[in-house]
Length: 482
Ligand SMILES: *Cc1c(COP(=O)(O)O)cnc(C)c1O
Ligand SMILES: [Zn+2]
Image (cartoon, rainbow, N blue to C red; front, side, top):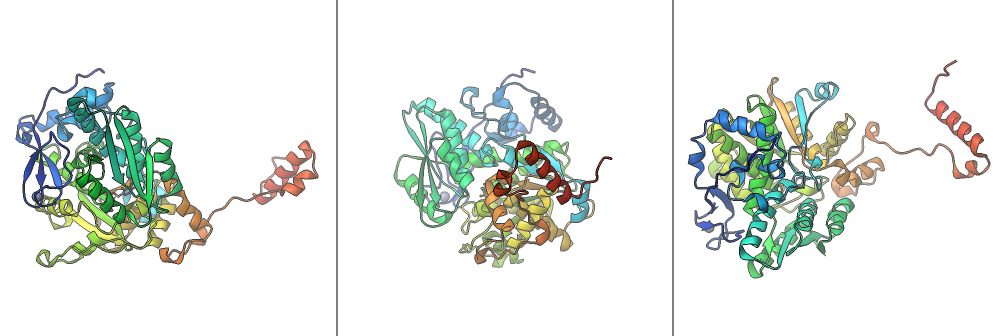
């Protein structure tokens, strides 16, 4: 089907969540020039979208699933909900979005006690959900480059690994004046994550410290120099990441009853985007009710959990925490940049969905690793942060927070291969003590060399084949066909 590109154009504005100041989108803004607060992008013409019946929106988004127009194949299948200011020529599409929702096999669901599925964000082009946000941020950047005829744009980001992989990939594809610089905490991203921006040709800079240290530096750079900041302070990324919510709703035929989502929380951009996405669909009647949303953090990096742990909203106070090593390394953040967005949107979420509609749980490192391995031993491809979500579901079930008829959708935010080093440490029982992880024997696995190289020397080719086959038959206790 060759659908036309949407004609609708709206007016978008940055709105500061702290002081309410508003700014036009002709310029890239990250934080409020008046008060330093974070922004959300607001569609001033949102009410005009309400004139279209919800049924029509659903039919339109469903029909675009079959479109061969690349600009509408990824996150911009939901163009009108995301950034109805972009022109088709500016949209970058690298195959992001539309990731599969894979049900847990019956045996695993029985073990966990609830029906659930993973949404495999690792099947995005740079193997994490960050591509959704980058597709939007880079499309907007391309529009700026075209309009302003810029001959060089340096994009910068701090990263726990996946932001830099995604930024470097989209920058490499955009090419021309767009160049990528990424700032990483030395030794605190996995080798796979480090190889990604290197392979995409980005300038990779490292500093001693953790993510929060890198973040402060790029913020200073963005305030002082002409660079485009691609961390989730950049509100265009939030818009793109809303597509996760749209896809979850679409997959469930826009019926959110009995659905609860589990999302890992690091810098809190993702959970912000997911809440905003569901709130928009609800405001337009595209969904009749909100799903329930559970944020999940490790006990080693849980500032958002600690905030909501206080049940009296009047007494809640946000305090950054000093993180300790976590296998959910991509979410190992003590001072989440998007926390004000979470607070603002969680309030709205609870107003519509009730007190139980938004919750935050925290889980032990041991449970994160065990849950990831349990999932992957049942055919999933979950990363440690996906394991964090499953650990969160198991905890919530144990605490009686999940009804029997509820179905959970867990965000496996990246591909398991990016985090295979943690699996290696588990299998070889070599976690440094700070992780507080003791491997379970039944989950450990290692390759076995069946014949030594010395033994191989003594045999000719045919003898070797037969000898090895015999050794294996014995090892596996194989029964002869005769
Ligand atoms: C970035 C990231 C997170 C954390 O998401 P936030 O938006 O920072 O809360 C979780 N998992 C993976 C794999 C990530 O790359
Ligand atoms: Zn402000």
